[in-house]
Figure (tube, rainbow, N blue to C red):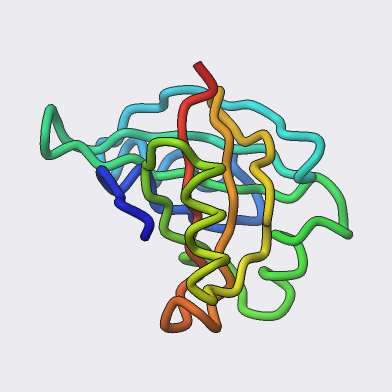
Length: 140
């Protein structure tokens, strides 16, 4: 069981963070939380928040930093757009063990470092109705 506490964010693959900023900030009115590079995933990410309080939605824009990046491959194959849905969980290693025991196909059997001080793991779309699913928890 994932036992998701909330949707953490929606991941959107883009060719360029800079080229997309005006749409997210000026047209949608989203607030930029910050930009950081995640070298082990070969991406640069920008987090935006849209809305307030309990109704806030976080968007993670992902720009590939290398042609071998999984995001570069995604964009090459499918174009820019929705890449994944991420859910907040507690005790990520335990969630992964439970999912594996239940026969859910995992991309990551162990947590790895994600952006904004999180540990993350991905579930294979063949086990999640075609949606790439990320589960994440704060490192702290």
